[in-house]
Length: 482
Ligand SMILES: [Zn+2]
Image 1 (cartoon, rainbow, N blue to C red):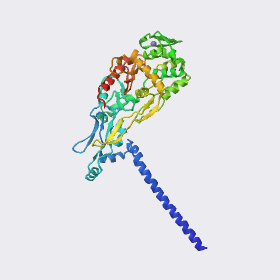
Image 2 (cartoon, rainbow, N blue to C red):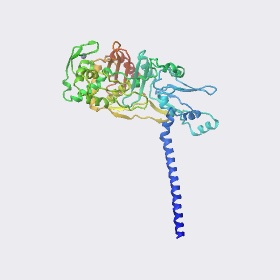
Image 3 (cartoon, rainbow, N blue to C red):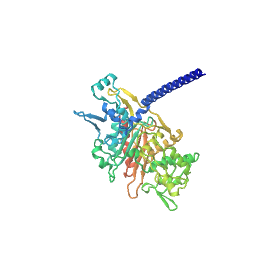
Image 4 (tube, rainbow, N blue to C red):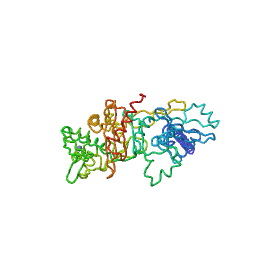
């Protein structure tokens, strides 16, 4: 009996030991798998996190790599002085401060933050790396080649001149961001010494704000893109019969809506009203629209929504609900009222129209290379969502082409390429000049570049923003194909 009991207890013990062993082995496998997974996928997020102080351990062994433009210019680099002190420098001073960003005592922004992991990784060959480690010499970090084009960025910044605002350009069929200008800007080499001034409460210039992706503005007449699409969706068989007699002033009860500078457009169908940006016609449309459906369409077009983008931006907002009164309905339909939009979102919307309804995910890093120029990682275009059907996109493309052919887009007539686009002159404060908008793309038959311009307090979209966009299109089509 006792023996039996001992045998039982031994075998139970053995089983327990076995269980423990298996358990430990299992745990070990899990940990190994987790570690492998961490190295493979998570380390990028942890190391890339600008709040992670362990990052300094990497910069002890690796010289932070440079950031290059798509056309080969050095946009950020690390300079090492004789005593070994490193200094991050930006050869174009202010030009890329809202896209490449800065790496300073006050943190990192833009590509300096997004690409942090790559810049502090080194893909030189293992022997060289080991020799460096043994000698206590730092290895050169990888270089990040951005999608930004120096020539276009310079052109856009010069064309915007002294206006505050933003200029953006993107390839609608890939999502590559070619240009991202925000003004006022500041010298990326002087972030630390100017920090107090830049962050002072009474600093009304707000240079740290990236107006391209964070600036919220009334979209003005560029919002007629959304209004026109909603009108057609609600009137699929009769939108072509739409007609409006414009006297320059539209009266609805006590409310008055004026066309820009009180211009009388005469009899307008929907296409003409869009091309001439007739406020009266669109105010009347606003009164007819189903508020709930209108809002759903706006949200489908990424108002009140997240954008497929991994850097800093603000959400655009469409606030009008079913309880809205006539005044708010009319104002919303012409892009005034409570609607707020970033230039970046407006660029994405027009890019989706250019691309048959599909929004390509916008991105700023083309590839990562080792110091010898060999590609280590390549970023490929991917779809970021379907904003509308191809049929809807075709309808809006036609409207946008007519803006240039017969309407407010006269700045593009005579260009050696065909442009489609929409101007906007958005009121934001009584007694001040309007914000000047343009969104569009070219060539219409096979869109290669989409552009968005917002110039604050600059006046008419057709007279200010459209010529700025033209300068960017001209520079783009004058470049050698890459
Ligand atoms: Zn009118």
